[in-house]
Length: 283
Length: 290
Image 1 (tube, chains in turn yellow, blue):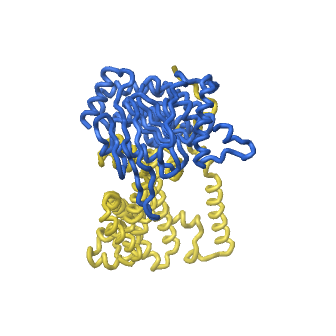
Image 2 (tube, rainbow over the protein chains, first blue to last red):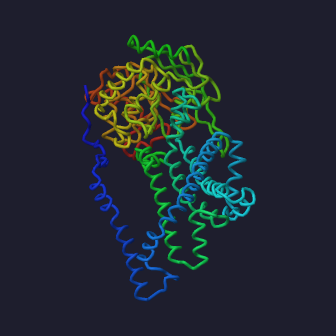
Image 3 (cartoon, rainbow over the protein chains, first blue to last red):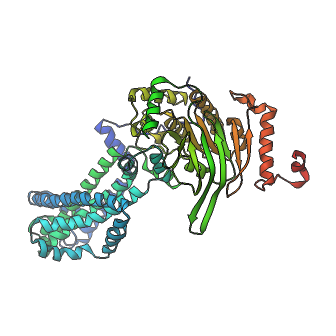
């Protein structure tokens, strides 16, 4: 005996279905992002026109078209170095997550860890981590290790902080519910607190990806023999500005790809509407 | 814990008889919260009994310790004085053989509607799962939610979400259902509809319901018994017996003289307590009633 739904209750039908057709998706992307795209193209055009009209020398500011040309011409070498940088970024990011998330869990569950490790972590943010690079070289020598360590250090903090915030955001009623169902400590974590904290954890991971690239490049500046940061230093020393810009583009693309990769995973994992979740948690 | 689990398994296996479950007795319970501004007394030495299968409302002004009652009865927070017995067992830790509905629906946003309803079965490891799955489908159908089993909570309206949370509380067929202002966040029309839905579902389960509300007519419409509470620290002002309102309750119930008599009686209690002003003095509203 189904009761009829009252007219007051309408379901939210605006959920977009997954469009499988690639062309349709590109069309939709353009429809959503046309303002961003238009302003981007606008800036590039103004830049190109200015450089050409004002006859700015290429060693000061190369035109976008020239940069693009360099990106293609130098691609064999730059791609080779991209792999080094990518490797450092991904490894540093993964290690940062692998240490950061468990540490955040420890901080949330142990008052002692919160008062000691967390307090120490927050205080340690006063140290510019970039300035640690020379020390890390002294400890870990040249090679990949110091770059991975500095990347890890850069990623670590946003991951820990956002995970702690996420795990602590569970509404008290939800914890009461868990207890009144007789959930064990592990179940309370795994079925209530962790999934509820996921949106915040992903926010931390996204911030960490951009910082990871910064970490790897700084490591390569200080003690590189490989990697995009290293090549950029060399090219800058020879005033090959066009090449420096081309490398900048490679680095940007690297960062964007990683960020979007995490966003993609996030969309797959978080199918619910986190905004609604937060609004409810704050009521 | 083991006993209560066996009870649940037996119920699933055999179906249930009417008025099952155990008496809940609250004996001289006080609760004092330690706050930054010093101790805050939420409940003052209160005793009452609820019999199996009864629908009892606790009615009182905001902040009178109504929620504290539910927390103490379910063993989620300890009381400062007195004790609570469920059957012949003293409640000392969270009592798991009950359903809890909060003011906010507290649905797991990441679980589908069906999976939310099945949460207690999953956590209490009740078997056989298929039996409970069937029950979950039945409850959802009764709540007018068939077809939404695989939806996510964010796709539902507030009223629908709260229905899901009621289904969740009922899926393990608990003998006790605790409801903490479950319809407080809903608009007036949805609220009326929810009252009828609740009665319909409850009439099939025969569980004891302890229903917290500050809505007088809602309490009168739903309950067998109303416990009227004072301002903080919460004490029982009066216990009203509503057996003169026959069940099943429906639209005609609200037209009974007894229905309005009870409402007016409760208003009168609140006026005497200074919780309601009773309107402008010239009307003589208070005098007429006394």
